[in-house]
Length: 315
Image (tube, rainbow, N blue to C red; front, top):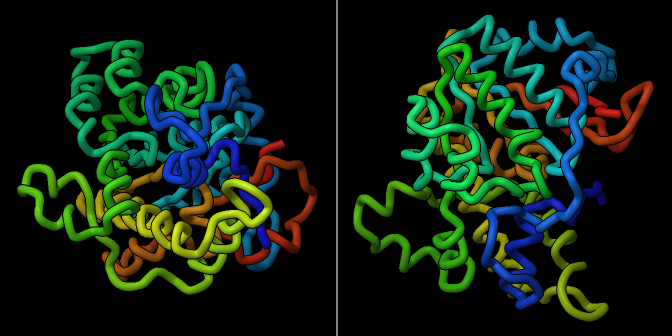
């Protein structure tokens, strides 16, 4: 089974909360990591090793940008506590938005009901510190992580007339989906209904299987979560996927005005649920999926073959 960093995955945090293993109060941090965020220089990140996820051919940073120039959507799948991965995201967004001003940056880390706060930041009505406080994001992936990792990517987009999109479903509705199903959410008024989307058709079987294998090992005791609990959490995961895909579709991606998505890599690796939902909504749109792996490698690892269109090793 391909690995994921459980300490920094929102799906793990939600699962533990639903199982009574964690609190859902406080920050939006996925795992409540208590490390201080380190920073990798963007210049260093541009030199990270990049490989084609199918052929294993090595690419330069400029060649990656050339690949990105020919698509409408670029997905940057991260491990949330990977400083090198965040530096690479910033490098890509800076270069891509410089070439394609007016493109959009969508973030899993921000929820749709926070879009007004995003717009206030973009308009200069609030500063970055106020914005992080308004969205409760200061320690999203660990102490100091927003200012160190995410805000610089947002700033890079805004510097090139970019739009910033709060792409995800509010956690309170995701919890309802897990505990009670989609039915109660389908009955809410139009204003609240705009904050989330339901999955479009079944999720890919491989994605579902990986999720069940992963989550089956979580929870109390040696037995992990039972299948019923995992199915509930997968319902929430699928709602996250559908909402992020819907946010990208609503942004109207084009070759001239692209959408770049920052997202946890479980959602995007190996044709993950967000990518699958996006392809369902926009079947003709070209998508470049980039997976940021927090290890060093001189060649494409066999376990990473097929993981994404491009695999970047961030050590």
